[in-house]
Image (cartoon, rainbow, N blue to C red; front, side, top):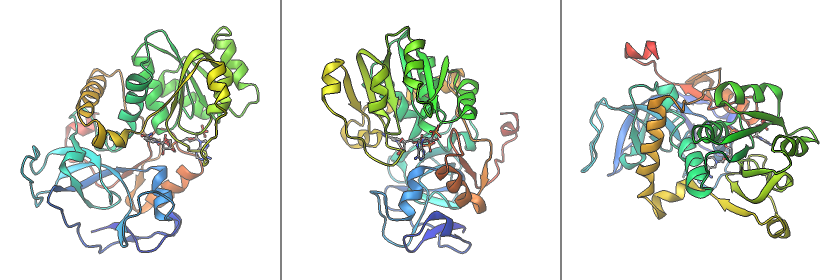
Length: 337
Ligand SMILES: NC(=O)c1ccc[n+]([C@@H]2O[C@H](COP(=O)([O-])OP(=O)(O)OC[C@H]3O[C@@H](n4cnc5c(N)ncnc54)[C@H](OP(=O)(O)O)[C@@H]3O)[C@@H](O)[C@H]2O)c1
């Protein structure tokens, strides 16, 4: 099978597609998935260079998010509700390949209304934004949210979800074209370009001088965002896409009576597994009703081009979820989606 096999720490631009890689060997809790689509993540770039906290032993296959079908030769572990041919999406190491072995508890049924391309980037991104806004910041209808890196994977999901919850959204990004994406695909009420030195003043103007109730930050722009947060505002720390972990003077937290809230969705599997189906039930209802819709970058990559896709992600050229199309959908219905 085809797979991006990593044998030494290399930048993804130097990782090549192997055409005769061995098929994955399932563990006792695993199913084998025929991968139809995979999603690109920034941490794939770090992982192939040995700069990510998850360092699988060599050789390993790159890629972490996928959508596909349970393979016809897959084992079905005890308790696993899936059968061969079921459409699923989920997360497992080795998704940039024709087949991947995944823990059956780390996959979900893919709704018929979603294509594999749409499903491949859901598993980590959407519950992260949902749980951050709902579970952690307890966002209320009518409140104002500033979403940083709002055209990115988690950002555009946060914009859509905050809108669906009845909040007012100020989307912040680094270029006019990305701000246009936030309006077009996210329904953002207002946009600001944070490369402008005046951006916090613009946010204050939009909020009538009050500042935003919630800041959603996946890049490491918390300190700057505190210049335009409201009294008793809440800040969601989601990630550090800009590359360094911020240090925050705590006097700023005290002076504005604000709360800093972290969200690491991956930890719920260990610490609060009961919350996961609750979040997914609500997310799938939002997708089914059309109030939320996965956003896919305009260029969908082939498996051969997957590393070029990671290059585009690294250069901040992509928006929404960048997807690798591994196999064609074989359902007539897919053509109508
Ligand atoms: N806490 C969790 O559970 C969780 C879950 C998923 C993801 N994350 C984290 O959230 C962050 C964003 O993930 P994502 O999937 O949304 O990524 P993404 O789609 O690549 O978007 C990241 C955005 O960050 C902005 N950015 C600013 N400075 C950057 C830089 N130096 N390099 C790259 N991008 C930069 C870019 O937007 P502009 O060009 O508009 O500035 C870029 O589009 C990552 O750090 C990821 O690890 C956390």
